[in-house]
Structures are given as structure tokens and as C-alpha cells.
Image 1 (cartoon, rainbow, N blue to C red):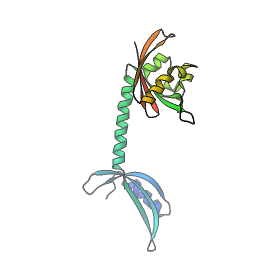
Image 2 (image 1 turned 30 degrees about the vertical axis):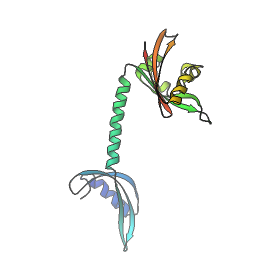
Image 3 (image 1 turned 120 degrees about the horizontal axis):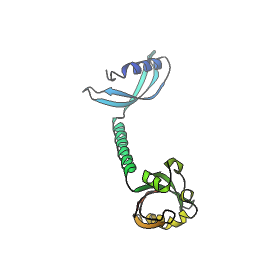
Image 4 (image 1 turned 90 degrees about the vertical axis):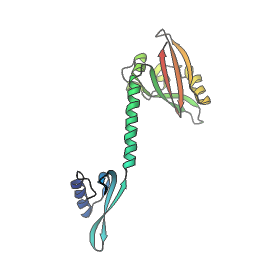
Length: 190
């Protein structure tokens, strides 16, 4: 009676399989509390001998809170992704690459939004995801931006700066923000 009606047939078939000597891996099931409230649980079953009879031991763990947290995280990710994709400014997310001594050597692209791709002359982020700044922009890019990256990680605060790009004949204003071993940079054509 604790099984949700939609779960009964599949779950009972799995229990019969276990009675025949099998073992089921963890599986998510919906259960009904005595008050009728639906909860998510993780269940596993194993055969046991009980006084000469073949029985099944079922271990159930309530995962309702975990599922709620996953759903909240999924909703938050959708909001982030929507904001990220629809911002008018460039947004690029980077991960530091350190040497054995912990010194920053360069950084790799984790993600970039559509305005960034347009400015950089790229069709998709997959073309450049995981590449270092020198691999994306050419030799010397890491050296050029290293003072900014070292500053934000040394001081632990955002840094705003301007830069000129001769090949575009444009000036941009950037803000870089440290985030653990990552940083995010936003940019706007000024």
C-alpha cells in the first residue's frame, strides 16, 4: 500500500525477481505516506533466508529533500542560462591553470555567451571551450592579461579596465571577478 499505484507493477515484478535469487540495484520509487503525501525514495532489494522461507529484504531511503534540491538547482541553472544567453554584454567564464607550485600560468575557457562569440568571430562555444587564452587569441594574450588576473586573485576583488583591439578598431570596458579557481569577465564595446 505504500507504493504509488503507478509504481506497483514494476516494483512487485522486481521483488519477485529478487525472490528468485537476483538482486536489484538502487532504484528510485514513489511512495505514499499514511497521510497520502507522495515521497521519493531510493530502494534496493536482496534475497534473504527467513526461517527456511525465501524472503526479500528491501532497504528504502527517503530522497525527497535531495530531489527537491536537484529541482531547485535545475531551476536556478535555467535562470542562469537564460540570463547568460540573453545579456547584451560579453560574458566569458574561465578556469585557472596553475603549475606545480600553484602559480597561475594561464586560464581555459569554460563558457562564453553569444555576444562574446560574435565579437570573437566564432560560431559556437564548442570551437573554443577548454582552450587557453593564447590558443584562442594567439601568442602573448596570456602575458597581456596576466596583470589583471593576478590582481583579482591577489586582492580577491573585481577589477575593471579598458582595452583597445586594433583588428576591430574598438575599445572595450571589461570587469573581471574572481570565483574560487575561476573568474568571469564581462565586456562592453565603448
